[in-house]
Image (cartoon, rainbow, N blue to C red):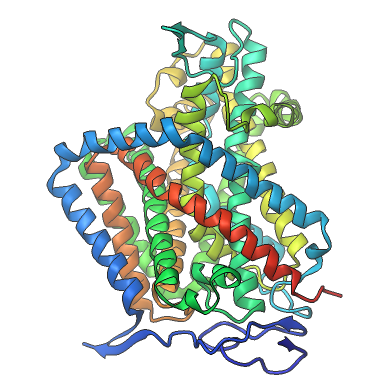
Length: 553
């Protein structure tokens, strides 16, 4: 059924999802968005929830939080065992999946399907390029860049220059690929290439696949803005039953645990920064208070809505991040950063085939401990980031969407890692400063900034950035999870989003107390594995949906 400037039937244009503008090939289904929802008003609070998805998701999550908090000492070794097993035995699934997502995106960019416009052939963008880019980037990996921007390049440089080591015929080092023993220049090149690999095309490929699929099935096909809709070409009307319920429940788990990983990292870094600057105790109590406080701020942002809340916070973050980046470029090794950007980008492209190879890897510690974790983290984040960027990308063509989502954040990540990581490595090589190398993971950023002018000011800005990224992630994440558990509605009551913001904070606290960083990593890997399979199947649904759409003129 094609919509030619007529009011579309069924779901499109209802429950907050705008109707397509111009020609679009709506799916003819009797399903109405929200038809399985429980709608009520108790104690003055509106409720509009998909009974099965919300009930199963919330109960399982609450039980998990209670058990983790009650059995903190017993649960930590369990997390360690699960993480080791998954990364040791199934890392190839993550690496292979990541490659498929990137290849699908690149194929769509150069194919005629790139002319399809999200929201109908005559749709116009809802946001300016500046606002759009800011929200894409802030939602995608803001906290991660702050946490790993210094530590990861420095770590890979150190392991690469240390070379390889063998024990009983097995490599025990953490160097990427074959390392660069004793060669500082070679180790710098390889270390930066490995870092960019983790923050470049592959994570954004996963985000782009989910975001584009959700946008097309919702804004062009008239289906609910929820993960199950992607599988309509495969499951047909069965997607509204338990097969679809399970897909959405899994998406809720993946989103919550992926978010909890980022929020936990952000809280630990903010606590470390406050201890570094003001001498506050770097303890679990401090991190818990940070999570509680930031969740409260996120709730205020939720009440303001996407336009006044998330967009403004995202733009504030981008401004602060740009100023901090510009400061490091100017007062740091400017020439090294300027030339390094192109050098390391070239190194990334050259090493990409070897770094992305999922089979027969000799650098098991690197590919399993670093890459597999990252890929699981990005994939578990993909429902959150994908649904969020789908909501703000109406009016863009498929080609425009994919180029922006793949290339713009990748290039910014290259510049960020070159500036922050390159400056830290230069402090080690040229100045002999070992403080940044010896600092704890969450303190490396502040140790690097401490060697530059205005250290107290820039370190404080760094803490503010982590906190505001924290807020935007919590706000955006609750918006996405609420949409899934509300049966695809995008205008569900705000108290539901507040509930999920509180749950996100509770999970982050539970994981930090129940195993720290390993628990956070295990949560991402455990939910990322089944969701990798879901997304691989979803790629077929995306391509099939695009093939039936009229092209933009």
